[in-house]
Length: 183
Length: 183
Image 1 (cartoon, rainbow over the protein chains, first blue to last red):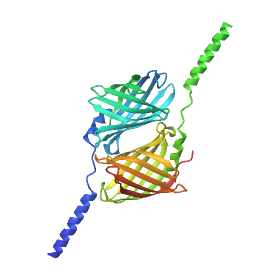
Image 2 (image 1 turned 60 degrees about the vertical axis):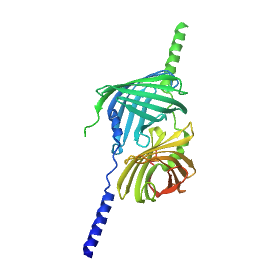
Image 3 (image 1 turned 180 degrees about the vertical axis):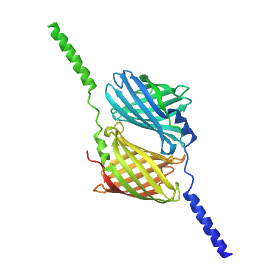
């Protein structure tokens, strides 16, 4: 009887340890799925408006978005060509269950940094936050309205120095040229 | 005379356009050089202390750190293993010329998000900010002290629920196994 008890105790301890070691990996919040319409490879044509950020002009680029790190986050990479040359950018969109919103951080190869939030409402994705360009800080809001077939969209970017007066900064026409890979 | 004036006008316009197109690329803030001691490939051994985030335990990890996007930002890729498995991570550090500090964002494959400010004083690096694991919010502060030869470091971190009472979180020992590539 004692032997059976010891054996049972060892088995219980073994399974408890094994279960702890194999605890199911945390899963992304269902909210993270709201980002999926952005995933894929996009081409875009951008028209910058004259304003605090410069004289304006046209540029074109590509934007590739994919879910990373187990599907918890979305990484975006932008490659752009314009009159001022080439620009590369890296962004991370993250759903934070503790604040129940998406945070957005973008880093550009001219040193520009964007940090703010991303709101997903239906097919409209709106970035809003701080944009630091060449040592100066602006506020930026940028709704991206995607068409019902999720294959094209338009971004209208506005910036503000004081958060009260907003001026158009850019209009970007986007077309998805490669959808997200099927799993 | 009119022809010469016209020629001069054309030359001036051409030069102005060419200068605008070839405007010197922005350069990273000199403050970013303070990040360079972290660039390279590091391994580390650590121990979580029992506390609000779990029962504690030992872990090992490695991180590859490099400057990206023209040297304006630092990117790190982290892989860490403990008894419960492996977690991967991606971090970015940016210099904020407006607030004159470094901004740190770190994303882990279990969904955890870190956002903090980094201060560097000599060989002592101190991050202070928030960590959001599994839908919860904590304050954290972390100090890394690099050895004089910059090839090893010790780390310790504390965590707080309310920002007043702090408890030990983890301790690590870092070893640089591969220096930053020479340019």
